[in-house]
Length: 384
Image 1 (tube, rainbow, N blue to C red):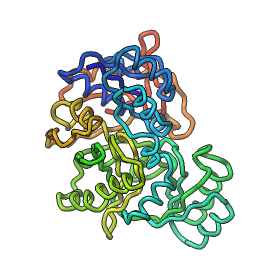
Image 2 (image 1 turned 180 degrees about the vertical axis):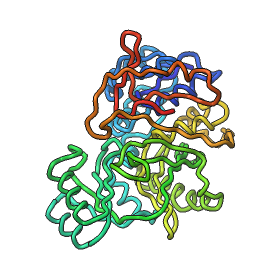
Image 3 (image 1 turned 90 degrees about the horizontal axis):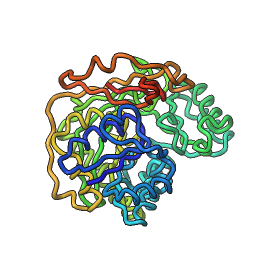
Image 4 (image 1 turned 60 degrees about the horizontal axis):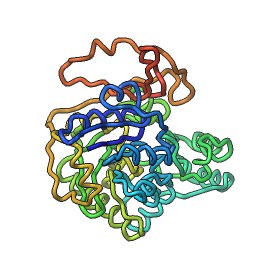
C-alpha cells in the first residue's frame, strides 16, 4: 500500500513511525513532515492546508490511504474533497469535524442529547459577557469558539481574570476569527483524562486511557498549551468507570452526530473531567491527540494500518489488537517563550546519543533539517 500522512508534528511522526512498521506498506509519504519523519517517510513539500495540491499529489502517486493529522484541514473539508476524487481518507467530513471546529456547536449538541458536560453560556457581545461573568462571582473557564491550536481555553480563578480573558478574546482578538464568540463555562474540579476511540460510524473501538499535561509548568501552573506531555494507562480509570464513559458519553455522541445528519468516522477524542458527579466532557477533538498519540502508539501492539483501513471501509468489527501492559510516558521539550512568541532555528544536539536505547523513541514535533543540522522549527520541538 501507498500511504500519505498529512501534517508535521509529533502526532504525525508517531503515526509515521508506527505505519512504517507495517508489512502491508509499500511506500510512505508525509506532507510536509519534519526532520524526524524524514527518517521513516518521504517528505513532500506541500503544506497541510493546501488541499488541492495534496489532492493532486495523491492522485499522481496513486495513494491508497491518506491519514489526516491536524484539525484545520479536517474542519476545512479535506476528507470531503479527497472522497469526491475516490481517494480513501482517514478522518471525519467537514460537517462532522464541526464537533471540534466550533465549541458552541459541540456544547449545543451535548445539551440537546443529554451528554454530561459543564454548564455554559455563549456570548459574542463583550458587555453581556462581562455582566454574566460578574454575576458568577467566582472561578470559571473562558473558551474561544473556534480553533486555537489547543490554547483557546483559559482557566480563570477569579472574576477579574475572567473579565480580562473575555476582553482579550472578544475585543483584542487574541485568537483571531476563532474568538468571534466565547463560551463562559462552569469551572469543574477533578482529574482530567483523554479517551480516544476509532469509529466507523456504527462500531466504536476505544483505545487505552491517556492523560496529558496542559499547563506549561509543573504543578498545573502557567498558561494552557497544546500539551506538555502525556502518559498511558491512567490508574484512576477503572474498568467500571471506562464502561460508564462508553455508555454515557462515547456511544451517545456517535448516535447524536448521526441523528444530526453528521455521521462520524475517524478517531474521536474525548477530553474529560472526572468530577465528584461523574465524568463530564470538557472538549471534543476530531483527530489524534498530540501528545497523547505518542504514548498510545508506543503501547499498541501489532499493525496500525488495518485499524485505519477498517475505519475508512466501515469494517471495524473485524479488527482486533492488543496493548503492552507497561506504562508509556512522553515528555515534551518546548522552545523558550512557548505558547507565546518564541525563536526558531536553534540547533538541536544529542539526538544521536539516544539511538538504540531500549524502549526510548524521540518524536519530532517542530523541527527542520538544514545543511545537515536539525534545527528547532516550532513551539513544541520534541516528544521523548
